[in-house]
Image 1: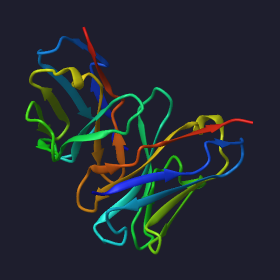
Image 2 (image 1 turned 90 degrees about the horizontal axis):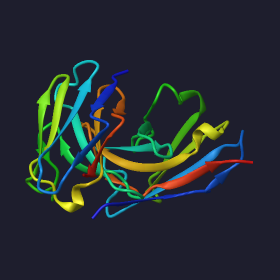
Image 3 (image 1 turned 90 degrees about the vertical axis):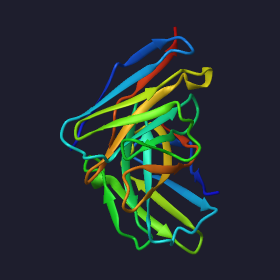
Image 4 (image 1 turned 180 degrees about the vertical axis):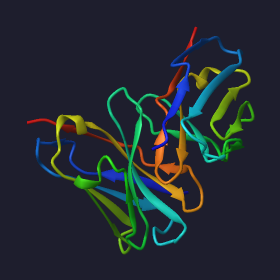
Length: 120
Length: 106
């Protein structure tokens, strides 16, 4: 059974960079048929796709976030990561990592999510 | 960017009733449309993919239909555990989600 688990700080100061990691178990991140995504949910709101990374390092980002966003993949540790710079209160959200099949349009496995609060 | 609009925002129903949820896309997404259920404090759970295919382990009371720009999620007879928020999601170049429909107990 595939499992995804987010890790990172729960509190970030304004203007700082958020760093989150998603650890994948029960399957290899190097299986070249999946896109590994980050998705966030502002408190009490809907879902916003942030971007994805392929095992090769290929990325695609939400145009609204691309100027602040970096993603990387660590196949040796079966992890992928997100860095979001210049954090503001508007970035306070629950951040999820999720898996999508390369040639499909949906997310079949999700992490439990981690709340990130931006506050001084 | 494709915008998904869900209606209604809230659906108040009793257990055993039928729920019909709508998702409209601002342009055609073919059948690249999925539905998720989310309960408080949990990650979304995939219910339906490719507009009408139930995900593994999803009960038959959940069904999806539609193509192009208009899609429907139907829960044939609500069980107590079905009261939750439901999101639709599409993939064109990028992914996007609808704003959600809350199914609450009447």
